[in-house]
Image 1 (tube, rainbow, N blue to C red):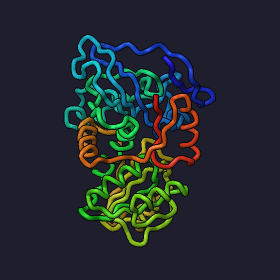
Image 2 (cartoon, one colour; image 1 turned 90 degrees about the vertical axis):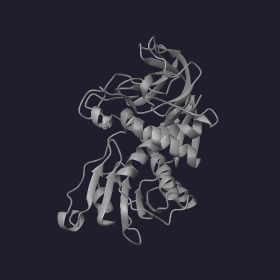
Image 3 (tube, rainbow, N blue to C red; image 1 turned 60 degrees about the horizontal axis):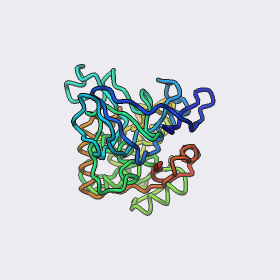
Image 4 (cartoon, rainbow, N blue to C red; image 1 turned 60 degrees about the vertical axis):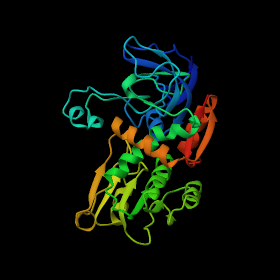
Length: 328
């Protein structure tokens, strides 16, 4: 099959041939229709995250159809449309897995990092980690929901935003603009601090009450803030913009080093600083249902599969606004 792989020396994407995956006993093979391009893919390609397997194929926002089942795989019949997301496996027996916190499992594995992902014609996944999807939505509209959306959903739940509260969003890329729509649908006021004219224009178009640069202070303090940009120096900026008793959430898997934080000025006053580590499958199921009920639609730029390297470069350089999706 055709597949993109990471050159571990040059950190470039290379298009070539790989053997098509064969399913294990509880796995399915999915023929890829579309795959979202996520900043986490960029962290894998650029080695911001440590290499887990050599020449990995990135991609973990996969929409496709089941074409093959392992001997014990019966959850998703042949022809079913499914989504393949970031969380690809957990041990199922540790204290976190058995208490509804499988995202914290020390043995967790991830699509496009621990196993080959969706920048390919086919991908395999454990059947219990695939999400059934509706057939009536365009695959490119669903793909960004499978990570950018799910992670934004979990970040929003951890942000403890009060009803009708003001939410600050730092970084208005794929996850930021989906999360903003989700919060706005629940009655929140959205203020956006982000770089890039394209991102700022998108925030205005989607109804943000205030749009500024990534280090600008909003006109009035926010109740909660979510940082999607992988920039540790935004943490004190977000804390300074947050009310006493408010919450700041760092939503990325990777962030640059945090600077010193002035305890008296920024943390005192019962401000909470929280992180997000992946998601549970229950998060995914809940969010995908909410997104379907709301008719949530990301703003998408599509790229032919053959131009995955260009999509990644556009994301890296900041030329892209909204979500990028590879289509087959």
